[in-house]
Image 1 (cartoon, rainbow, N blue to C red):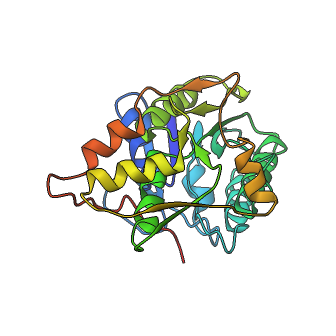
Image 2 (cartoon, one colour):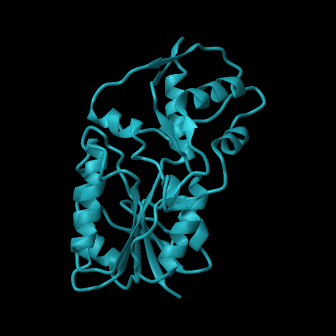
Length: 265
């Protein structure tokens, strides 16, 4: 049975991946804090402390950790570099989760994810990289932000292709348990969705009324999104669970819904 270290194992994807791997691999979750749980190993991606011990004896590293720090996007690059350095002379298979469009959309966080990919590819270690579209959870998070105001403002011409995190975790588990495969086909959700339609569906299910207004958004980043570089339209794999399916399960009868997570400020 392979020994798998999961970074970001308490995050949205990491938790789902650990569930997928339990019983199929010897799973260890990296944490900066000590724990009595034998499946938790201590190591700090921000400082490097404990990482060498954490990766000792590991066959596969599933690198799911991401600070999602949009104002300091190189945070992920620094963490990835420390993780790779900690492997020393060992040769674990590194499986990395990335984002569709990181090589085409000039957004700082995307550029950092692409640099992480490059670090892994150039590390000399066996590797696999899976790019996916945004998770349903992230789409819900932004809808919650957008609908707090009396008027819901959505970028004109913006579409998305949200994918279910459980389906991504299942695909990641296949890759973790398989042989190194390099860049595998991108993965997206089953539908391309208009941002205004998503906002209206969210408002209806949460029993609120708000006008939805399209606003043009200038700049190269938005041009990249409008061009669809963040979606899987050609070769690739697709999940089956739609955002509507996900949303119906999240919204309570009174229209309330918990935030899936918060972004770092």
